[in-house]
Image 1 (cartoon, rainbow, N blue to C red):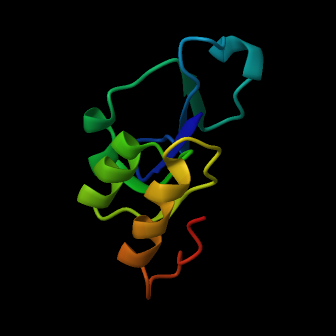
Image 2: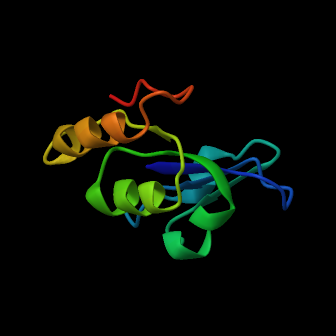
Amino acid sequence: MRAAVCAGGGVDALITVGDQLDPQAFGAAAGHRIKRYVPQSSVLARCAAAVCDGGSGTVMGSLEQGLPLVLPPMGADQPLNAAPARRSVSGSPWTRCA
């Protein structure tokens, strides 16, 4: 599950759940959109921050945009991706990335 906190456009949070979960099952709160998939290239430039599991694609895309990240890694390569992300944002208000 990934969330991107977007500035402007009336969307407070955009959450993707992948193809295994039904977005309708979550009951989105006001100002939140839940989708199966959204191309990150279409939204990251408009975001103020990103919350993700630490997958390399989202981490790299977020860092390219200079976004602060919240990374609760769950397994696989995710803990390895969280460590350099933490170093890249040191000194910012969001220094706890893992």
